[in-house]
Length: 257
Image (tube, one colour):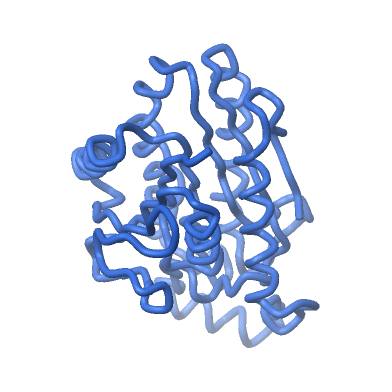
């Protein structure tokens, strides 16, 4: 059954593969494109902005992730063009590299605003129609945050932990409306996290240098991949497709790859 799917970010390691896989499966897929100059690469599918490609179509929608009105307008555009939104897939995941101390409070607020509050803005824009229809699916896709300390990547992983708690709460609260929510996690580093929508470097460079003089930087996730990152991203896309195809009410609250 063809569904209208909103992939919130396609410039990261997984979002692009997810969007293409779902379009190839016959769904209508809208991919988020930020107004800050970050664009989704769709050249290999033959798609331009707001044009169809593949089977039922791969399209882009532009919005400002930090602006509720902009997000609401984007959601209305999708709903008007495709007669509603069936699935939302959250793929934007800010990454940080450096000692936690070296990030200023303002920077942490930026990470939280982009990674958590923007998700809440999108969710609040799409849920009223889903609740009225008594049908819908929310899928959060992000790196696994269950493996203990995350040295030199702490703020970004804190966002993942916050999102998982929100997803768990949504899953419990929305079931009465026939809306499913799934939190999908993958191994960090396997999906080209360095090419995510945006990454943040420490604002306090002096403190960052002080750590480098004493502590060996353990951020080698991308060098430790046991699988080709593109292959792994395709595995994530296949898992997302399986969640969408599962019966309503039978989808798991958490899936780990």
